[in-house]
Amino acid sequence: MDPVPVTVVVATRDRADDLRTTLPRHETEVVVVDNGSTDDTVAVLAAEAARRRGAGLPGLRTLRPGRNLGATARNLGVRAARNDVVAFADDDSWWEPGALRRAAELFAAHPRLAVLAARTMVGVGAGRPEELDPVCRDMASAPWGRDDDLPGPHVLGFVACAAVVRRGPFLASGGFDGVVHFGGEEERVTYDLLDAGWGLAYVEDVVAHHHPSPSRSSAAVRRELLQRNALLTAWMRRPLSVAARSTLVALHAGGEHRRGALAAVPRLPAALGQRRGPSRVVEERLAVRDR
Image (cartoon, rainbow, N blue to C red):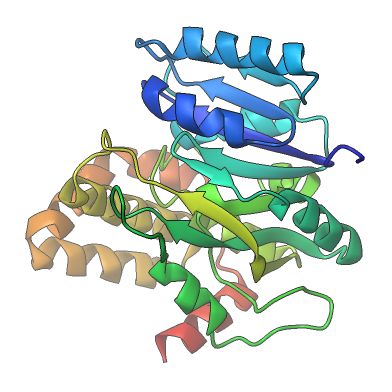
């Protein structure tokens, strides 16, 4: 069978145990970006690369920027990819057998497609069956319908560890940016791709699996981070009135919302330095969502 023309890009940091499980599941070329791991990650990557060479499997390459680049580490992997279609995976996620071959077919058949958001099955505990990620139900029933030149319903966002992108437009959008660093990094990319006329679609028959690592941050810490980054994205791309109102609402809400807003303050100069005027198509879609 011909090789799958898709590169998998994995960004990782200090999750050697997860990588031991997930890396062997990737059926195609893999580029791993190590965000400054201090555990056994280097040894795990070397062992998997050797295993693949010995078995005649698609290779594994490692990039080491020498520090924690957050989500922007994936940009390095996309630039290094040998294929025009790139699938993201985290160190605790992988793609179902055959999923990426199907994704490659869809990208070839739909030239306007820039992001394919996959159906994601989430592991919820040992011995228990996987469950559909609730965000997939939202994407499948999104209110914007679909166009004939896209393989599924329009989406206004995606989950990076279960998304496949077209290399050119992803890089042209700037990829993930250092202002948000990590957490909700997909939002600004989504806005810029839509504004440039690209399509983002949810496709149920392309399946990813995500078994969240036990070493993840707590849910409360993650919600605070997502609040911070949503506000930073608003200051970068939404109308100023929307960004200001959202910030005031978060400050008055207290708790993790307030902490997220306060955490955004030191990054506001960088966010404003990357600011663009709001996109008409994005604002129209957000208005439909809000209604």
